[in-house]
Length: 236
Length: 247
Image (tube, rainbow over all chains, first blue to last red; front, top):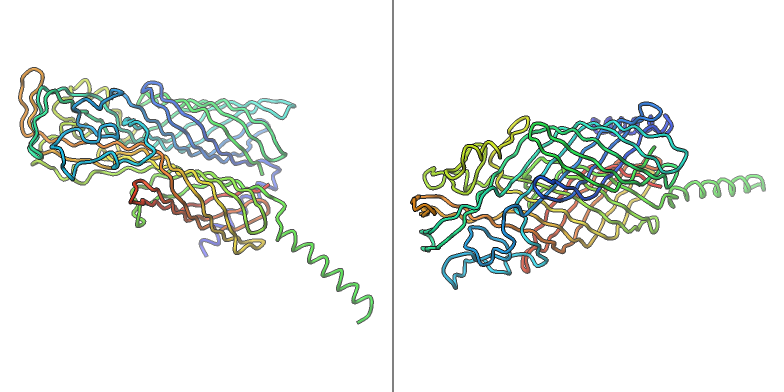
């Protein structure tokens, strides 16, 4: 019964949208994202519901995933370094030879990319106001500002600690001039301000495609990110 | 039967045929779906409540068949149970810094510069991060397709982008001799293993849609097989609600 009511409410909501002459829209955004301070790149996937609030203005409820990764201070080639770190170029960094339990190249999936151990993930949920500039053409520009609550999760290589000698007990091993990567891990709630510029071109009466450039500024953690996304929008 | 009645019956049948034909052969050939839900590891183990997002586009070939492409972004994190069980008698872990564990080789200034807790520190212990983004192309078959309800099964070939550090080795009782000659004994080290790759796979998805005009509300159960190693298949699962728009 509860589910039926929810479904009915949902369709009432959509029907209300239809009845109010294309005042509602739904959009998807997908494209590359950049985190300049960390020299990291990745992607953004965003879904948004828009509602027209006046002639040129819409307010959106939006959720998005922002993911960035970078190599950070990890040297490009670590295959000849004694470093407590493992990726497909460096799968057997120390230990006795012929140990059946040691990792092998085959231990890593086939279509491999170089390790990028710095990871920055943000799940953003928030509201955005967009002002659509008047135009008689099919293509229109819009600009606005969003406020987002952000679930932030990150790991970052902050230091390579150099040791003259590293002695492991199991397996019994002495390593000269070893490097120990020191990672920072954090999971926290944050908020972001997001100015946006977007262009959309009306392909059909109710369907448009476009692109968006949006900044994400996190005042409390002092982070700035940029996403350049392609978008499609359906109004109803 | 009189001629009038016969004509009426013929007209009625023709009209009903036209009306049902509209339902059976939808004018809208294109379907665009936006989804949000949860991802699961093998065996429906939930590692996270982080919202997974997806987008898909479908082109109907006939009433019952379509070709579809789909992208699903699934991120999860979790604590490392071994690291959290106070290994090595509770000795500080050398290579790991969190809000609750700064380690002996990170200065106060460095801690200050790296720990930004935003509005609220949620958990310092999620040392395993995993991202999977399957992108697939396949065929959807709709065995049930009525005016209001539609049930489909999608079979697809996929490529999945993986970026994770889900494996770690541990070294207890390690001795470090630092550059300045200082010896640091009984240290605990963990070896971070990094995976970043594309891996081929398959996916199977079950869909149910409740349709209204040119949009629908749907539920999807998805299974994404990732052929990570030559002998092993690591599936992930998805349950999502979606909005579908047709034109």
